Image (cartoon, rainbow, N blue to C red; front, side, top):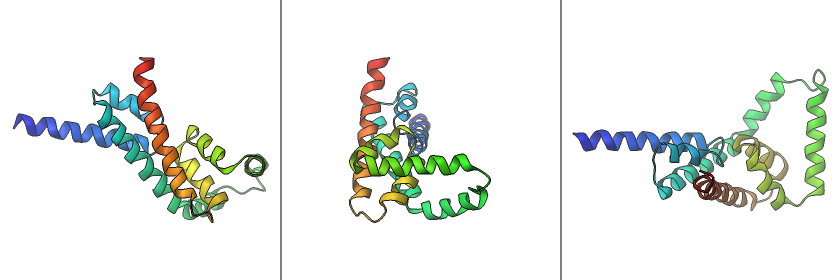
Length: 148
């Protein structure tokens, strides 16, 4: 009975780290290590959560953008239009792989929506974004114990 309770607690910790990683992959390992999870368990939960979050937001980004376009009218909010122009200028100025490796610093949902919007026709972009997400999960898992 005691081992069943411990197993349920570990599963809950795993899913909580995974859920946090769907939004902020770089900072999710801090939650796993604070909960006492081992390195590889934390890395696995963070990587799965980050990739799962990216995929969900990537494939549902058209619905998200349609909802946001209803809520935010660019005529009423000219600053939103200026931000969009800055993003387009970044896309033209910097290569795709650099753009992909900078975006996880913002958040996974923002990364997925921007990648889908600007690079949705490129077939390699999904795999490259998933690899970047796994890299940031590994980076978070390696740097957090070093900072502690």
